[in-house]
Image (tube, rainbow, N blue to C red; front, side):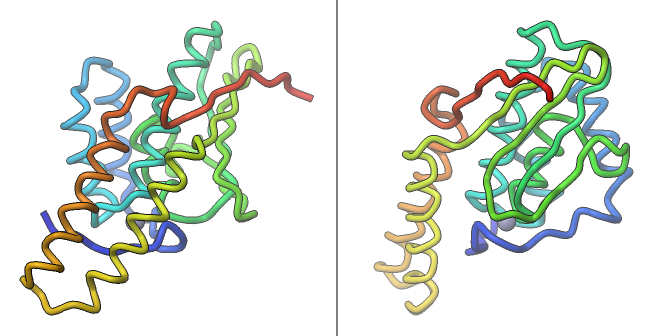
Length: 187
Ligand SMILES: [Zn+2]
């Protein structure tokens, strides 16, 4: 599995992969997809492993779950406020894809996801916890340090190991430790 030291910020190319996105969307709609499958699909879709895309998946999954629990009906549509890696995770996690017009991105430098149920206009807002955000930044800093070291050196391997541990935590920690979801009323 290649480690790419992507910044949490820009590295997005979500157009042109719609057929893949649509097939995931239907796989996700089927429901019982194990998390490991979801993350391997995310890696293929996004092109590398990074904290940002994992964040997006967690935000998308948590928001979708909360909106279902809140009785949201009809098609779910997403709005995200930063054009960066999490956008790809949201498409995989929430099943709201750009290609099916279920995702709008406003580039305002805010890691905030609003998910709306078009049927009855219920809405939830998902954000990262402070801990998740800090670990994401740490993985980015460790990546920078690792890149400055010779490939395969023990010190670089140690840093890469730590980065992998962070990714592992971000993928598997209980939802409440990674994401905060609130219900919002639609104006
Ligand atoms: Zn990325």
